[in-house]
Length: 486
Ligand SMILES: [Cu+2]
Image 1 (cartoon, rainbow, N blue to C red):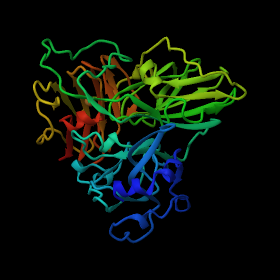
Image 2: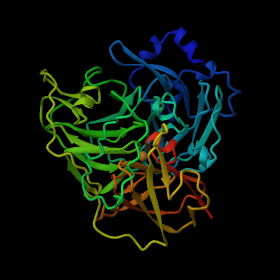
Image 3: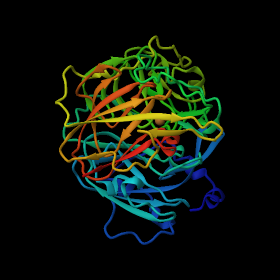
Image 4: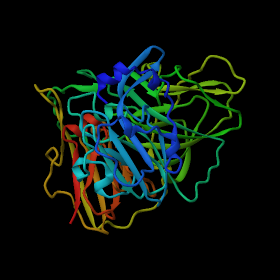
């Protein structure tokens, strides 16, 4: 469907579809309308898909009478919550009703390059106004997500700036299920724009040593940076949607996802603590309560909240301007009717290593140093990012041997905190800014500004593997690398 046709047809039916539905591989056939009917695409491949995703323009009513135009999955953003079973093969048909090629990336899954959803890895594109079938066996169990992996360079209406994202829950055999309510909270910003004066929030949450701060800083002027002044959790700005209704004594399992293309975020809930049980969908060895979360683009946090402080509260970003511009949601206890309350958290502090265990990893077979630098634009429009002295692509720098253990040291010589993502693999956190840890398995890690993070990766997923910063502009302007297997 062309964008103009969509607008002429009227967004009303789509606006009503607001809240993301839940689609499981088994039940999907009843849940989804026959999207194939609307496409000009080639005939459907043989055999029925378990899940069909339709990429098309949508309208989102973030606040009453403030409707934005973006691109979503199956008429909504976030897209439907997909549920798959660990180890059970799944077929997903994706129909692209837009004029640009697309990729759907299955973030956090250990699946082959040709279905991972990255051009750099050789996944075939979903042609404009065409379709593509993805078939894979989802693993491991946990909170994953799916999102577009197209490039955006310079165009803030494409790629992860759009509404093309959703939760993907891979269910394992031993899901404890010890909660009264399960909620999904995807953090987003909308209608991004360029600025010369992006507010830098990177000093929040991760104050500490700066082991990678260069002795001499590059003082050339910075280029344009991407920012936003409109936010939501799921598809509604703070106060515009229904509150999350809870009862005293409830244990609520929250799945948080930062689906922003732009910025790391902090989240807190006055009077309550988040009991962190999993990071990036992987159970942590040392679950801990915390007052504030830091979550970078691409990351997920699973946390229980014990509802033991009756009232009407705002769960949201501690920065007043961001929360008040939408990044929050109201939590309302039964029989409580006062105005939603916000109380600033005492602690804006995040430390991954709190959730790890003591101990050390086996000695690696090889250590790979990755040095990240920002090249200020000077007179040009955009900054560039270098990995080991040059922007993507590299040649034969990052070649893995199957079965080997690699210790990868991320040296962040820039003044931003970067959420770094490795496709198709999990890595174990070894050290963050000099603090050792063990047992935390992730696919994305925020490396503090001028900071250092060390991770161990077992090379057990042969095939091309993309590594990149999950901030879209950084990725588009050099901050990525391709690993291969020898
Ligand atoms: Cu970055």
